[in-house]
Amino acid sequence: MKNHNISTHNIRVMFWVKFFGTINFIAPVLTLFYFGRGLEATHILWLQIFWSGAVLIGEVPGGVVADRFGAKQSFLVGVILKVSSLVLLVFAYDPWMFFLFSAINGFSVTFFSGADEALIYESLKEDNQHHRMDRAMGKIQSAGFVSMILAVVFGAYFAKELRDEQFIFLIVLGLAFHIVELVLIFFVKNPSSIGSYRENPFKQVISGIKVIRKAPTLLLLFVNFTLVFIPADSVYEAFNQPIFTNAGVPVVMIGVLYALAAIFGFVTSQSVGWLTSRFSKKLLMNVTGGLASLGLLLSALLGESLWFVIGAFFILRVGQAIRRPIYSQLKNDLIPSDVRATTLSLISVLDSAFDLILFGLLSVIALKGLTGILLASSVIALIGTLTPLQRKVKVSSKIAPTSSMDFD
Image 1 (cartoon, helix red, strand yellow):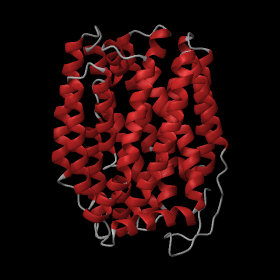
Image 2 (tube, helix red, strand yellow):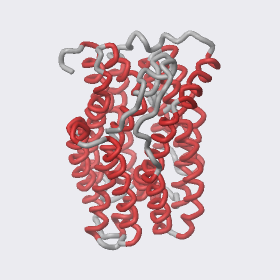
Image 3 (cartoon, rainbow, N blue to C red):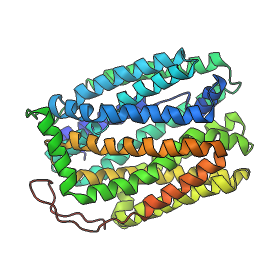
Image 4 (cartoon, rainbow, N blue to C red):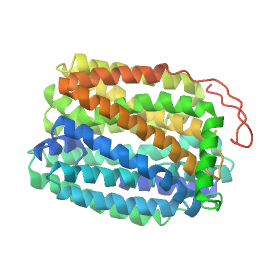
C-alpha cells in the first residue's frame, strides 16, 4: 500500500486515531470500579443494554451522516459525545448516572460504526486496492492492541488499591488522549465517493435495506460473527476481571495479562493478510468461533483453575483479533459505495437488537451466578459458529460491486 495516496494516508491517520481513541486506562479495573461504586452484576448487564439501545437508535442516523457529509464530520460528532460521556462517568455514583453514561457512550460509537470501514474501503477502492481491506483493517485494529499494552499495565498498577481517586485519575487521563484523537480526525481525507449522497434520507435507508435483502450472505456473515462476538467479547469483557480474581489473580497481574494478550493481538492483527493467503476465510471463521465457545466453556466449568482461566482468556482475545478484519472484508465486498456507511449501520442495528435480546436473557441467567452466564455464552457462541456460510452467492450488479462471494 506504500504507493497509493489516499488509502495510505487514511490508513496511517486511522491507525493513530484508533490508538488514541481506544486507549482506556481504567479498562483493567473497570468492572471493579463499577462494583466499588455500588453496582451489581445485574446492573453491569443493564449497562450493556443501555449501550446497545443507544446504538440501536443512533446507528442509522450515524450512517446517514457519514454518507451525506463524510466520515470526518461523523467522527468529530462521535468524539465529542464520547468525551461528554466520560466526563459524566467521573461524577457517576447512582445506577441511573451509569446508565446515562453508557447510553451516551453507545450513541457516540454510532458515528464511527460503518463510517470507519466505509472510509477505508472507499479509500482503497480509489486506489484499486479494495481487495486488501482485511489487511488494512488488521493494521488499524492492531493500534488498539498497542494502546492497550500501555494503558492496562499502567491502569492496573496505578489503581491496585482500588481507591476512588485512583479511578478518577485514570478516567481523566484517558480524556486527555481523546482530545488528541479529536485533533487527529481533522487530518482524515474523505474519498470522493463518501459524503456525496444527496437523495432523500428515507430513500437512502431504503436503499441500504435493499442491499441487505438482495445479498443474503450478508445476513449469514452477520449471524456467524455476531453470535460469537457478543458472548466472546462483550459479555466476557464485562466479567473477566472477577473471573481472574476468583481464580486468584492479583489486581496488578490483570494488567499484565491484558498487556500480553494485546501483544498477541497486535501480532495476530498484523498477520491477518498472511493467514488469509494460506487458509480459507471460512475455515478461519469456523476455527476461531469454535475456540471461542470452548474458551467460555472452560471459564465456566474450571473457573477456579488459574491456568485454564488464563488460557481461555488468550484464546478469546486472539480469536476475535482474527475474526474482525475477515468479517470486514467479506461484508464490504457485498455493499455498493453510495450507501456503504448506511448499510453498515443497518447491519449494526441488527447487532444492537441481538445485544438487547441476549443481554436481556443473560441478565435473567445472572441470578444463577457467573457460571450460568458463561455457560449460556458458550452455547450462543457455538450456535453462531455453526451458522453456515455459503461459499458463493450470485449478487445483482446493481446491488454489490462483486458478482460472487468466495470464502476460500
